Structures are given as C-alpha cells and as structure tokens.
Length: 124
Image (cartoon, rainbow, N blue to C red; front, side, top):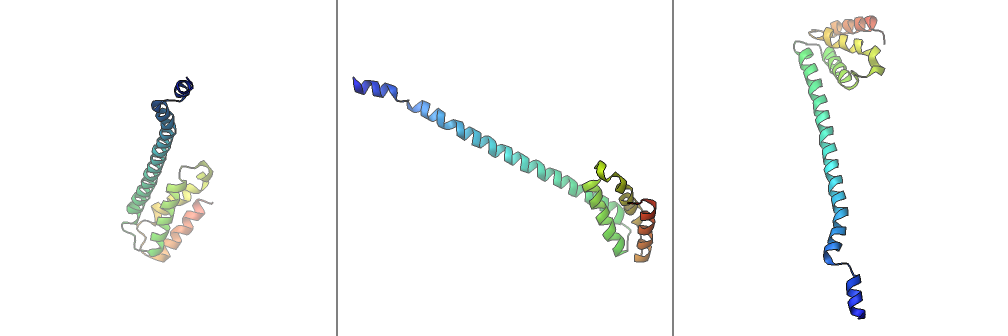
C-alpha cells in the first residue's frame, strides 16, 4: 500500500513539463522584447543619420570652402540631435542660419564672415 500512495503523491511527467515551460516562456519573451528594442533603436539612429545626410546634401552642394563644409556638417548634426528640444530653442536659429547662409560659400574668408553675421543675428 505504501508504494501506491507514494506513486500517487508524485507529480506526473506532464505537470513537470508544464512547470518547466513557464520560465522558458518568460525567457523567450525577454529575448523578443530585447530584439525589438535593439531594432527600434537602430531605426531611430538610421533616421537621424538620414536626416543629417539630407541636411548636408542640401547645403554643401555648391560650397567650396572647407571651413563652411565643416560648420555645415556640425550645424546639421546639432539640428538633428537638438533641433526638437525646447531647452535649446534659443540656439536653433544660429544653426539654421549657418546651414542656410554657409551654403555656397566659396572661400574660408566668406565663411568666417557669414559665421560672424549668424552669431551677431542669433546670440547664443
């Protein structure tokens, strides 16, 4: 009789398998969630890279001044990273001025004069 009661008290194989599946489902869910977050982060980063590239392409086209190209790239980067931030709203005009006015600059002297004018018209 003792053998029968000990066999009845033990869980069957199906219940052991079911209890082992719970942690596996949680682990699988975490892996899927992590992959989704990594993918969505790369999509945002790609979108930012595309925005910066479009900004640079539109402004650098006819620009021959290396100084102007450098500042256009920096301004495009700033606008992509900080352009929507309310904390940086006072600086946004300066960077927009750089992108718009440096476009087409033919010499470093012209670029320096444009940068000075943007700074004077949009104090930081």
